[in-house]
Amino acid sequence: MRCLSPLFLLLSLSTWTPPLQAQENLTPELDGRQGRELLLKNFRPKSKLRVPQTDLQRAKFPVVDIHTHFRYRFRHSPEQLDAFVELMDRNNIAVCVSLDGQLGDDFREHAAYLWTKYPNRFMIFANIDWQGDGAVDDPATWACHRDDFAARTVERLVEAKQLGASGLKLFKQFGLGYRNPDGSLLKIDDPRWDPIWKACGELGLPVIIHTADPAAFFDEIDDTNERWEELHRHPEWSFRAGKFPSREELLAARNRVIKRHPNTVFIGAHVANNSEDLATVSEWLSEYPNLYVGFASRIGELGRQPYTARRFFLEHADRILFSTDGPWPETRIRLYWRFLETYDEYFPYSEKEFPPQGFWNIYGIGLPDDVLKKVYHTNALRLIPGLKANFTEVTRGK
Image 1 (cartoon, rainbow, N blue to C red):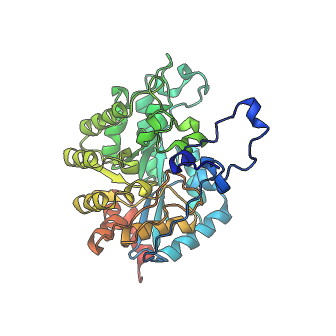
Image 2: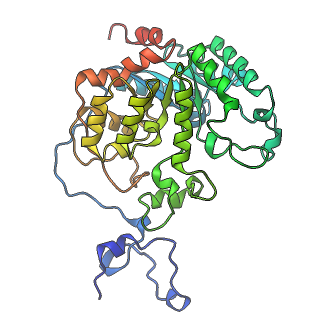
């Protein structure tokens, strides 16, 4: 029986089909055992390392999670909300910021869901309604192409603030999905939107902006793509050249907006969506004093470069905000404490058996207490209007 190399075993992808004459002899289970080939989807390596493991049950200091999605993940289920508030209590999470507020009656509905029973545990960010009452498949009918769109959006943001909104969240479709009447994608730095960003500064509403996506999502889905398995499951997450702007173009357009509006606070979601290149993010933070970053769903990236990530957190301790992209299961939430507070080695970044964002484990960065406090809550208290009162009420006596 011939010996197959480990590289060949790893790259025997599940899309391969043998010639018809060989199919009748194909082993039903390509499980890598007894000399059989191994499908990537069946690869379940178990580490043989024996290193210290820290089981943290809660964060060392009270936490504000500035990036959560309670509308989209819980669909306004009261039972799930009750259970998650209990999780928050166990893990020392004082306040979560839901980024799914929307506008108008939708905002009121979401606020009633979160605030009726838990008025101090949640803040809400609004969202821009680019489509309005237009047809989803006919961008020419969308609200954003009307002459008064920016002015009307500002009016609705004023109303949202009166209803209790603490900021604005922009999703990645802004730059990668929303379109002009001619079919081209809306440009992030289109001057038509400038009155909106200016108004956010005047209203004191920070803007969390998700621009582009991980670097691998803009590469070909081939044997060199380190996120092949994830993109194979979600081909709609691929933004290859030709159909979409380059990642560099999108990030540059966002940065031009940040520079044009120095009086507006921008929070770059997912480490400004450049967690693979922290040196460049550092340059942005130095160049744009109104830019901050969260690291929701990116400890998988940060934790595989622990030396660089730790230096980044220490250098920019005043500009980084805790965020998870949750609500997540408790196992995943506690991995954030382990990443930030310990020097543990080679542990998973997700509770899932098969890593959802790459074939690797992560390392803790052991932040000192003064940096942990800034990341966990101090920076958020400084930026998000109304948060300090809620945080103080929740943590009083603790």
